[in-house]
Amino acid sequence: MGLKYKKLNSVSGQTKKIVILSHGYGADCNDLISIGEYWQRFLPDIAFVAPNAPTICQINRSGFEWFDLMQTSPTKINDEFKSALVKLNDFVEEQLLEYKLNKKDLFLMGFSQGTMMSLQLGLSYKESVAGILGYSGKIYDFEMLKKNINSKPSVVLFHGTEDTIIPLEEMYASYELLQEQSVDVTYKVFENCGHSITPDGLSLGLDFIKSKS
Image (cartoon, rainbow, N blue to C red):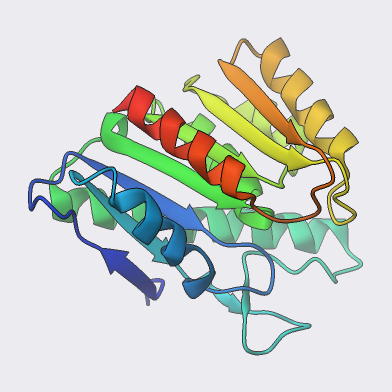
């Protein structure tokens, strides 16, 4: 059974690009589809799709998780992470087929755990995606990512200085690894911002998508 989702078809009716919005731990598709509603006002030829993660969240039964962060076994967490990547990939392929688009027409956007998913999946594709946007996130597994990089699309990372869920230092470490792998990566840090997406972050994300469309 595929992932449940919410979708915004392109306003123009001519879909030239698609953005997959992957939510964070304990949230659901409603958490990010509102971002698509905002961005779509300026991007009429782009469709936005926000899937639910595949598993009900262990600490918030009304939300979902890509993998269980409460697990004590690193092996089990990695297995769940890999399984979720397969499911997200299948979902992406279904959406591209529906819209008759290719990887070059795809943006992956994630928040927190959704950023971990977007980075790992997007860099594993042989054909480069249009871009990856990561908010308040990081690379989940450095070695796994390095072993599976097959393309080097443009990546932009957004993070707050007061993020206590994923500390700013972890974003910097992810940025440095991507740089070492010759990925076209940039970042923007927001002062006095916690684990959230700021209005400025939304505007800069919009600018990024426009620049790659």
